[in-house]
Image 1 (tube, one colour):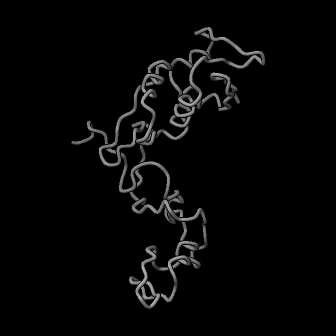
Image 2: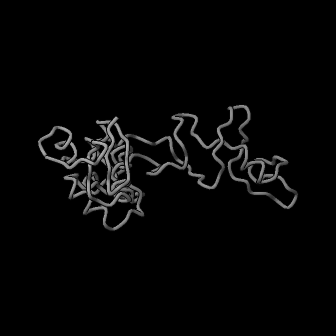
Image 3: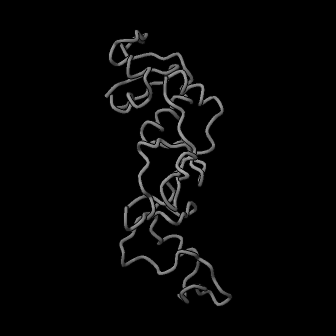
Length: 180
């Protein structure tokens, strides 16, 4: 574990994660770039901790959601980190070297509670639409929408991936230069 003080806020990450944060931090960890240290001996960066949190999240996941702060690209430049490609489908910024096939992720239910239920407890319908009689329009089950919301699993059975994770749900990310 490596502790880094960024603008007075201390971050903890593995050395591998920090090396993915760009050439600047990799060189600082190697000792080729002299870097200040705080009173506790931690690496010190006089940068915005809010932006560094985005950089660290990118290093961990390989993705940046589309509502990133405008100054984030300048932070990537400072840390000698290449600005990621933009997915043509979902507009998420992503690291092409860590772009894996996510074709099993074809639905997204961000409003549902974070529950994981066993296979036999799953209901046959994910859409809690009700007819006037209080049954599901898709399957006819006599359940209210709230019951469907509470019991529907929020993870995909095939890959165990969360349905509300950032990124493209229909297939792997596609950059402009992947349009072949």
